[in-house]
Length: 219
Image 1 (spheres, rainbow, N blue to C red):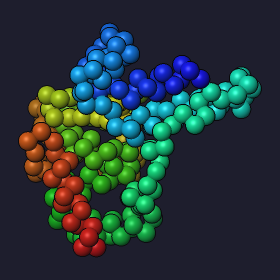
Image 2 (cartoon, rainbow, N blue to C red):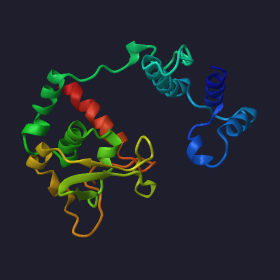
Image 3 (cartoon, rainbow, N blue to C red):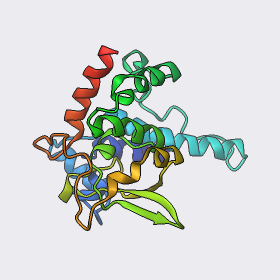
Image 4 (cartoon, rainbow, N blue to C red):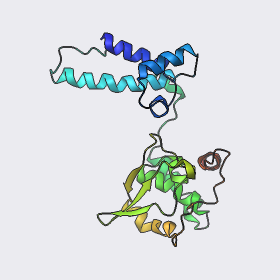
């Protein structure tokens, strides 16, 4: 229990992106230096999200009688799942039906980014920035299955939540709709949605998010 409390205290004093920016340095030393310098710290909700995973592991160990009791009980600060009223409600079937019956998807005249980004998010589980930032050379075949490489490539302005790269099989419905046509690059890597304006951080998701928010309010 004491070790877990110390780990929580270290997390509360760590700066953002500590594991990537201070590789090879003990996190306890990073936290100590950051606290001494009054640097930026991880948001309490971020810390709680990490502690929830730790608690879940010990919950499982206790249920399987691998340990006598869970030392991680009441370890979380209590911010990660508070204030539920401020969270956006999840979309239901009616919401999705209303979206995909809108003129963007039925007229056949919409800009292709407006048509494809929601579909890529729905069928492949891509986050908004991941869908908006795709390049034409990211189609690949894994055991003959058409797949997309979702990359973290700062040189292209591409980011993923965990700063990693993953491969996602393309859903058959997207294949039926003709998604492969987006990735005909003729040997040149290009953004598949060039109509989406980039912001000063080279991100395409900001402009798309504003358009999408306006669009769904009209429906």
